[in-house]
Image (spheres, rainbow, N blue to C red):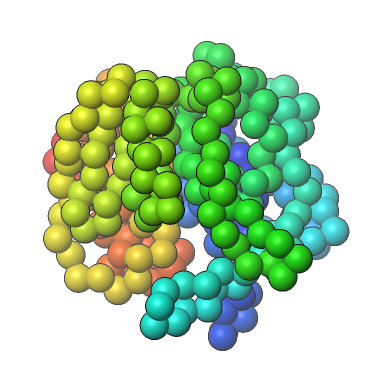
Length: 275
């Protein structure tokens, strides 16, 4: 039995120092485990992918064999980040979800490269389901360069309890914020150091984020989303308290580099206590 089900591709991120584990699921698995939850990860990668071994202490992993592991390359320029997809693993379809995981109380859909077949969302009618949207907002051509893709599927979203995305994810189509606010019960739009907006059935309230010294922003949104979902059982499903915990742990994430930004169990307990 698992408490927190993650669905999405772990990625291999190409850096000057070599391949490192990335993708929402890498950050979310470590974060949910720090809450003391039993984590299950449904992903896809090559059968001999060594980066999966780094996640095994945090999650039970079931991986769909693929010819490639989903691989990203980020190039930073004065005008901003240019992102390339250098490989994509196998798609994740509704029938791929193990039967013994269908009753997980917390489900986090975490597409990173459009890999999750949208009907997967309908498999969890009794679960609290969260969607981190960024992987359904990407498309690329033969050269692999990532571009924005508009996505809004009301049929899928009716099976989603919570949706989280950054204002940067929709900068090319800001009207999507209103569209999602009108469709999902709980929408959170993060705005980096400026906090964010929480919509409950379309009604907005703002929240703040602790001020910290920025070291690296990678993964902060993933830690925020995973902390939001993972904290709910401990907080009697009080969304406002869960947002407070998520904002605190997301802020801690940016003070450390990369995957080391995920919270420790002690940091989780301190954040829960403060809420």
